[in-house]
Image (cartoon, rainbow, N blue to C red):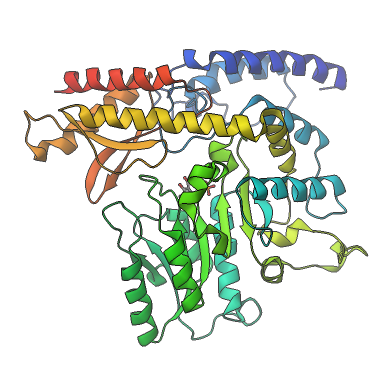
Length: 468
Ligand code: PLP
């Protein structure tokens, strides 16, 4: 493809992209394909001779698109959203065009300094004290891994000497995300040493139980290392009590990491930031603008109190990367796991400037209000029940018709979810809370409107009647 052809194709693609964003609601939100359907249509080998872009694009439309789940669909209510926006996409286009590898200041000075400033803006927006410094990671999973590695390095010399006889412990609630256990494994600490602390009736970590677990571990000869708090658990957005956990970590001298992967975007709302009292005493905090702040994947904001600890743990400078300026600049390759880095700050910069914090706040507030109103409607319905508090824009509920025995509810709700998702009208997922199977609806997609949430509720009720 020469540049003239690129120009022509790119203009057409931009039109296609704008049409897609304008009309995404016309697609079934999730595809009705079976495993292997797409694979069976793809040639077994790469072509020997180059093909026309028109033919490639035709295959994209005919083979790939029908097999896609439309995450930007206004009635995508599953998992957590992966929100995007036009300015974010424009940032991506420029980033890809520049094709820069932003591992060091020298490899792209502007990329490094823009990241410094955008993370400074974001830190101010979420009211973290200026003792914190931010860096963009690819995912919350990577950020949590960095936190555990720093916590480990603070109490050992494992980076240099490898593992000793010391037996470390990490603590998180039974509702914590699977990425915590994965990080524990990768850090070589072992799943058996992730102590899962019970939750209270709101599905938030029980601090007394944590205190007892730490004392029992110390008595048994373990070295407690780190507490990972969830501010917004994946199942129900339960909020662990950060202030109490900060007190405990301070008195026990433990690393305090806050995983706010989804809900942390709500830190830009002063009323929600108040609910996160204690956040300012964390050692590290992660939240994902790529989930709820209109910046497409990947863009995970990681804030640490001690940057020297981070670069001591993850920095490694071979001769071929040394520069005369290393003492004066940030070399972000030393602030995370991979060497290579994308210029992610560009899209976040475009998003923050295009919308401004006021509009971003307004959208989050609306979504929270819609779901809280929905949860009241569900609760008021004689045949449905809400199964967890709704602090944000996610509601966990189940169909619980009084004409049926409670032992039937799980099968009924499984059937209901299957029908809802099969329809292509909405897409939702399930979870289990205290052993109870429940449906989970989260409205954090920028394309979702109040009507979409209400339409989903009417559709859920009608489908539940059919299931019955
Ligand atoms: N932590 C929580 C609470 C999450 O809900 C998720 C994903 O949904 C993650 C961590 C992992 O996020 P990522 O995909 O950025 O690694």
